Length: 285
Image (tube, rainbow, N blue to C red; front, side, top):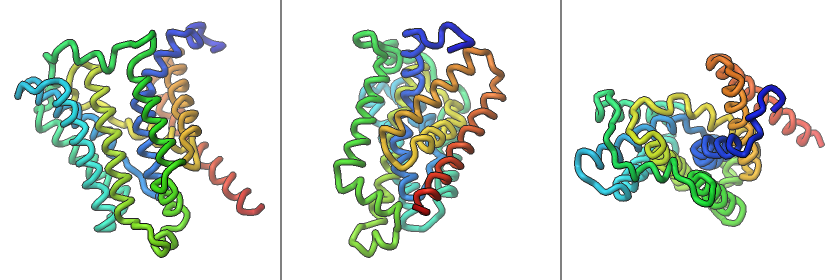
């Protein structure tokens, strides 16, 4: 805000909110996964695959926009479901399972398109990602709804209490009657759902199906979720906004993209280190 006059302008702040909408949506699912000691690094590839599937259905098979978008979201759910089954039932480490899914989903996106973006979509598809309602970008409304649903699930339901219990001590949670296997499958499916939803928004924003989109996207999502800390959605909101403002500010200052990577990585390290320090202090007290 000191170095550039446009940073605190209403137009730019709304632009930040729109830019972080997909990060925030995926961060809700990532928070649930992190609560149980897992991680999901496949979301960037799922975003690309969901968008490509929807675009191909519209262009090649004549699907309507809404049915094609629904199928795109379902693709995200299926990808998350497979990862969840591998983690929960086959006890594959979450990092390995979602790394495999990251590669598989990206591969299918390129196979379906032969590496060529899908263009020629109806203009009306841009409404979801580029439209405004009462002067506020439509993706911001979707983000607010997802944040509310995430808060309600974690704070007001037994599902959320079970996730906190699993994260605290998985064996104790299992002995207390919580079906840990089912819960893990559910949260990875939810993470896939939110990634699929973000893929549809990305499709709408770009007005094309891009197989190479969202590469490295999981880095921003994980950092935002970690910045939030302790699985509280209100904290995740803050983490998402911090990452959005950081990226936007560095772009406005024309900071080289590679230095932006360095800054984001440093923020992630700092967030994890700070969180660990807080946990140690609480343990001592």
